Image (cartoon, rainbow, N blue to C red; front, side, top):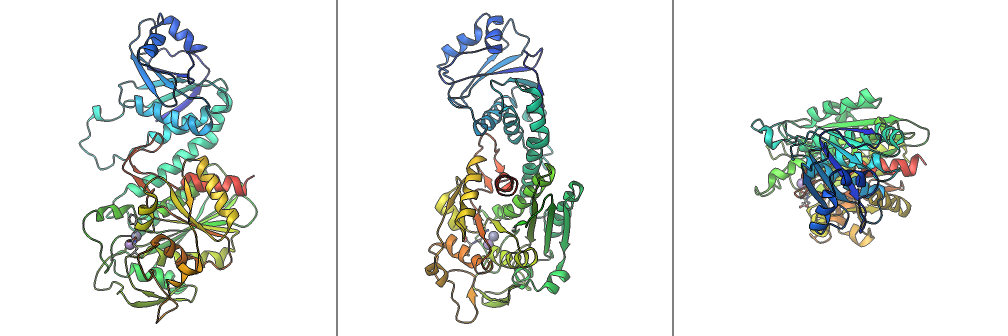
Length: 483
Ligand code: BES
Ligand code: MN
Ligand code: ZN
């Protein structure tokens, strides 16, 4: 959907969208529209108990006296900040997408947040219809253009073009990867897709199996060894500023000899959500030419059961030199991350590392789909992440790390086992495992198992792949590196 900005004026065609504050009335241009429609709009508000509550909406179809084919009146609550502006934009899009109108003009009530409304609408307009060959026109959105009539037209347009639209592209980039099924998206094709970032000035380095063997990334290769698809590790580097980089890593997978039950296994095509967040974040920082030095690294593997697959009980030597007894081949994500974390820390000596992964079912049990969990050895980094997440509605809740949990990883034969000695605190023992590979570097791990995809749409997040983490990481870079 195209988002554009224009000086406030009533449209000659399409849909007209007006805002009303909580307990307020139609004002300014909205009051003019109401007068032109002989009071039909205020009458509709009164008739439907509409009181301007945030995101509540009513629709008046074909009002006489106005050129617009329909008028949508949407509440903006008491305090319209950037976050709510995004949700209002997204709600407007969803309310009108299939209404039949091809374009809509949203009369925005204030300066400073029109770009956020455009961002929200564009995020809500994301769709993945690639494999739906029988979709009929009436089932597709008719709305292709949103004009935002903002009092600060030029500033809003500039902000959207330089920033908002770049974030939208980055989130869509991540959602597209997450949406692809496992037969189409596998390590090699995924790595090829990431090369697209080169056009934006990101250097993209792809390590194939031979290179990974040479590097001795054995815990990562152990996960991949049962698959006909070779592993890849991709390092993406945006050099937009001085100073040490922030690095982030993650995975792609399904199954193993410790095979999952078949019910719901198809969901594991989303298991590369963390890597997509990193890819999307790289696209965002490069797209808006962030003044920061950022490295993204992703470990791409397919976890399969086969004659060549890793066995429970196998001992592997990680890139860090530490040995791991693989008790459960389904705890594969941490094996991938272990090598990436140690590698990226040694190579770049980053000021901080953030990893994202759909790491544990235990995280979903703890937080369902609202919050992702954050685990960190550094309070300041954890706080920065939590506030960045709050700003972009990608919420985080902090969990503890403690030696007592670390002890649950002891192995009689190797330096550690890859799962805890009991199923209790499964998300924490997974984080403790990762912690063994980061040394003293400020590090945070985000377990996004419950938030990488959603069965329930939100104003700016349609059902399916959420792109969770893209905006969070982008915001972290703004807050920590660019201000
Ligand atoms: N990718 C899964 C975790 C997961 C489960 C993500 C459900 C999203 C939804 C991970 O590889 C996994 O299988 N973890 C195991 C670990 C266990 C064997 C210690 C789990 O959580 O069951
Ligand atoms: Mn698994
Ligand atoms: Zn997994």
